[in-house]
Length: 430
Image (cartoon, one colour):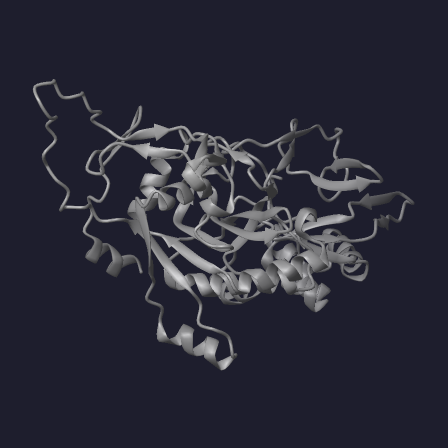
């Protein structure tokens, strides 16, 4: 399920708020009713949308606060009714969590240049009192299009711990992953998982071949570990918004979550608190993947599967990452095992390989491709048992065909495997 879909009004291009009316989903304009009915449409990548904090309009929203319906009566008897769902930026959320109505009003009115004592200031303060007094909780927003962060191997333990803190925390998460038991189980599994950081060169290869990846069947044999968290240095995928993916086992498959990374989400004076409370990742895709589910290059989670396939083919290797001493010491202080982080990089070429490519006898040599390309996966009946008389159906995963010293050639891109110096690359990125 896509958790990052932003719904906007086709007329005014304002991001809409989502409400449930029994079995129906209703979209409304933010704050209060507009002069026109909301016409909900999905916002495409890069489309202009006004998606700002509902209280100050000065920053991108982080939390969605649920309140009661708020009405303010004017002296003439008219009543203005306001929304019951408020998308709020990180700074304004600090005022709401502290119950500091006056500070919230001063901040928001200052941005609007409304002086204290004015009618606008008084109405705004009354509205803020209603939000604070009727608040019923908050949900992490996953639809905000954040500037991505650059992720490194040494950051992964802290990144993982911040997300598990969110899972165990009191604030709500999107519905598909909001069940309390499910959240606790997911956090416990992630605490034990292996973390993989994809170095820049291998990330380039994954991006180059990902869209052409044939259908692959998801099985235990395809995965490098029972559970895991993979992070790329920069976002990958068709929309360039997938920064990391985690997989954790379920009874009949896996819970796979795709994440967006968050760069600068608020002013610098609040970033340290933001990193401690929320961290670097927000989920943007949640999927229950069953055994032997089929995923190809068009799937939102396909960069993960492409990465698995290339690791399985031994085009890449996972080596232990060097972590700062401070991280391992912090884990020991809390009686936790040292985090297991691996850097995934392209495997060095086999230089001992024979260069004799001629065919035997006088027969002409068969023409060989000058590039590497995907070969689709298929099923095969594997012989086994006494006299190899028994047959078992097995999966042959998709693989890149061609000699290891050949480039990967696509319609618009040619990339040479293993062209960087590994020593310099490892020292730079591990």
